[in-house]
Length: 273
Image (cartoon, rainbow, N blue to C red):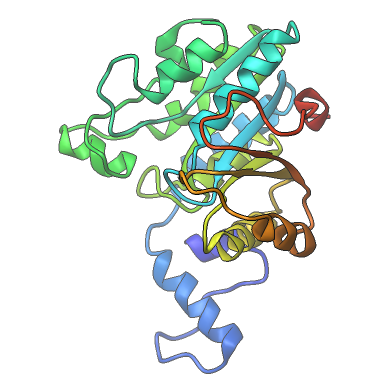
């Protein structure tokens, strides 16, 4: 169940109304965790994680939500690394809302990475409907291949100096009936770069994302946060200052709307060590 993937939480013994904050949290997680992990998925995930931890350097670009600019940020990271002479692999395990043209996230990532490798391997599972991947797949009479979500990264093992993995939505966005984005992040073992929109509400969203990362399974390593200006109206520095005060992971850099470079240069390769 979902609650079994979080440290410090166990499902309540009964389905009665919970009493107290801790029991309420456990009960809510229990209600969310109706789908059980199948045994062979657990074995597969363990094997994939042990193998991928020995692969090229990598970063997992996650978001506090959907439409926060993950693809834009990932593409800028890729372009900087290409300019530094690095061979880049870009991987998006699944994508929905695809138009199957050059505007799609996989093509944008592939182009930014210098068109390294085969475009089909950037995102092996693409769907047209603008829904969560497992729902978008079913709208086409298909199913998301949970094993391919993980094994698709193998293509990039010997082809790049660093692989940039872009997630789907937030860490708790579902990919299949059993898998969440956080499951892939844990299996891959790459440090997280959290993309957060510089808008009202970002403090809460970012802190919730960091709490999820810290408590999911044995914890997900967070390299830092990129604060992205997604709205035309510029925000003041209060969000950045508040996040810098309240978050343990650092604010790596900020990004102005439609900018072609980060406000502060980051050693992305160094974050993978």
